[in-house]
Image (cartoon, rainbow, N blue to C red; front, side, top):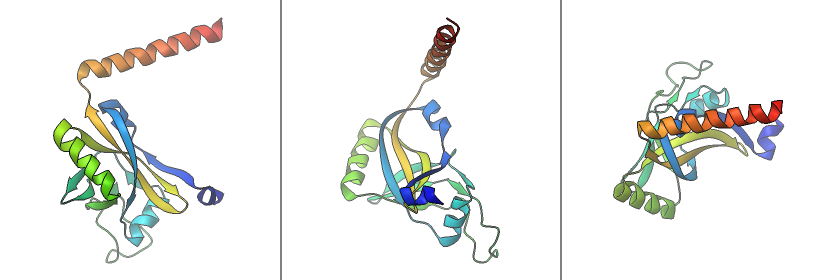
Length: 155
């Protein structure tokens, strides 16, 4: 468990978000959890794929993120897997995000969840939805990079 002491252990990564959105800015946020949720997260039973963040009433909320129920506890004490969870951000960050989300039409997407010095943190990003041709350009650029790497390796 030395990973926890020096700080940074990635639990889950939302790779699809980088494919669907053009990432403009990232923020680190704490997340308000119950005990069984933390235990499930430490086991790695989290899915960020369908999750997104909203700002409502001056607070940030993470919606539709799935944390599997903890098996070792009874059903009565367990949590709801897809409940809305509060993100812990500074007021200045929330104000900044409100302006960008409402005026520029950007989306808040969770990128990854990790343990930092024992605390569960979520990396959220301001993203702009990609069009189909943007996705094709990215795939083409990636394929070209692979071809260049292969040519350099063989040469």
